[in-house]
Image (cartoon, rainbow, N blue to C red; front, side):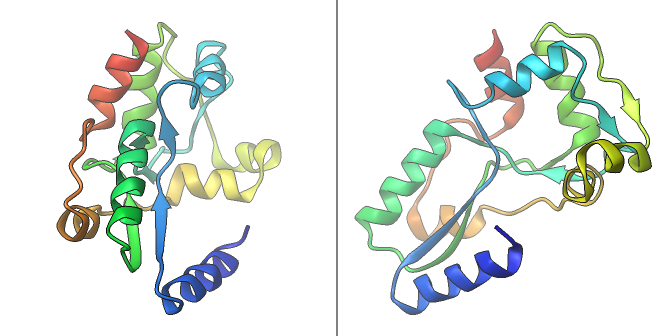
Length: 157
C-alpha cells in the first residue's frame, strides 16, 4: 500500500472518530524468524551506509498499545514504536551478533536497487525514526521493551 493510500485511510478513520495506529516493524515470537534466518545466512546485507532508521516494536508492546487504544476509544494517529529509533548500521550488526551470525555484508545502494528495488533501498538508507511520545502521553502506554536492544537480546538468547 502506498503512503498516499495509508494517509487517506488514516484520515477517514480519524474523521470517523477512530484511532489509526502506526506500528513499527514487529519483532518477537514468530515475527522475525525469517529475517533472522536471512541474517544468519548472510543474505540480509547492509545497504550503502545503512543510514536509514527503523523504529521497532515488540509484539507484546504492540498488543498492549492496541488494547489501550480500544479500551479508551482513542482518537487520532499514534506511532506504536519503541523509545529508540536506530539506523540500520547499528541494529543490523547487533541483530547478527545475537543471532550467532557473522557481521552482515555491505553492498552499494545501486546494486541493492537492482536486487531488491527502490523501496528496500530507501528504507535501508533514508528511513526516518518515529516518536511514541503521543501514545505514551495520551494512552498511558508503557513499554515492556523500551529498546530493540533489550528485546533482540532476550528474544535471541
